[in-house]
Amino acid sequence: MKPVVMAIVTLVIAALGGLGFSTGIDASVEQTEQREPEPEMGPHRGRILREGDVAVELAIFETGVEPEFRVWVTDGGKPVAPEKVYVGVVLTRLGGEEERVGFAPKDDFLRGDKVVREPHSFVVSVNARYNGRQFQWQYDSFEGRTHIEPDIAKALNIATGVAGPAVLRETGEAYGRLVMDPERVRVVSARFDGTVESVSVGLGERVDKGQTLAAINSNENLKTYTINSPIAGVVVQRLANPGEQTAGRALLTIADSRALFAELDVFPSLRARIQPGAPVALSVRGLDIPLRGTVRQVDTVIRPNQSSVVRVTLKNPPAHLAPGGFISGDIEVARYEVPLAVKRSALQTFREFNVVYAKVGDEYEVRVLELGREAGEWVEVLGGLKPGTEYVTENSYIIKADIEKSGAAHDH
Image (cartoon, rainbow, N blue to C red; front, side, top):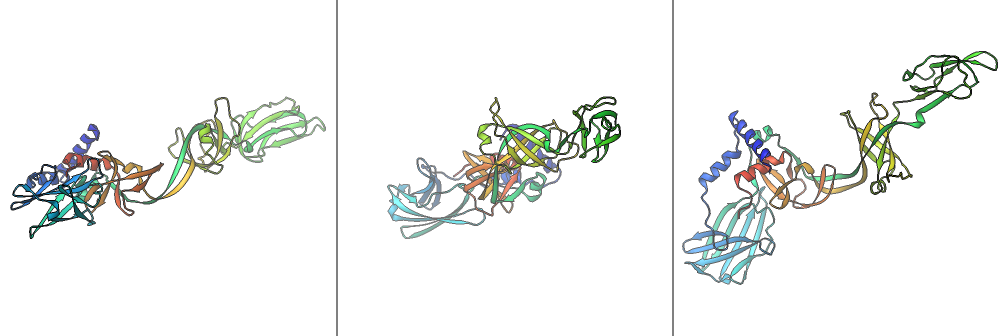
């Protein structure tokens, strides 16, 4: 957590407390510190559980192996052979899920028969038998977990979603310009050569289909006829003036300036993955509204700079768009459905792991993820999270900051 972000979160929480909110965040930590003394730890860095002269040390061992429970037993301070002791452990995770761990003798200790998956956060219930006596202990061993009251979560804009299937859309970024559709450009000339008597439109003027553009006095019969606009559009070129001869040349050019498409420059690695009809998300400089389009054509010509042109048809562009404007586009090059994904905005780091924060009631706890493919706002989840889990999607850094502040990062 960056110091600036951490400071902002602290100030927000303090301000909310000053406004009368029950913050729950700092209060829960302070209460825990007041009522819970430090547990006794053994020589193997495990928790000591005592009853009379019998002491059981329960530790999570993870040096050179996947995390596993190990147990050492002493009686009156002297080691007890592991085959003389029975130990069973039940781990109750957030949400009520239970995991049972059995043990078997190994060298001078009892070794658990399961990998202890992350997070190592649970209520630990221990049942042991030794020398005809029954022992039971229970304690909390939480990490990566915090409690936040609903009103605080709402005030801090902590949003959640439900993990499930998603469609990942892989895109490639390209840049270019808006251009007029050449299929909507008309070059206007005289049907019969003659003298230009008048031109009734000016450069840049918008015209309607059928509107009079010019009057021509025919050389053939000396009669005057009019030239009308073949389409609605804008006069983008005027090459005729009164008194001139038409001489078979172009007089005016009319273009439908609303019939625009984008020309995006792409390079070979991206070009090979683009298919006609692929969706494109477009952004125009100076326009806040995103545009949608589809790939119309991938140019077969490679230019000297090794780029090619991809032409994109726009869907419902706003009327004030003009050709020549700079534009960027995210072109979809792959799409695939995955059974489980989370939003990229939800991801945080916990120790060396990628995590999200699951929400159960008013409790938040890390879920260590095995990630797959990433595309757009989604990241595929291969393991570590169950479908249907509610998790924090926005402002997850607040949860991380609170866990780090409370010191609940990693404690066995």
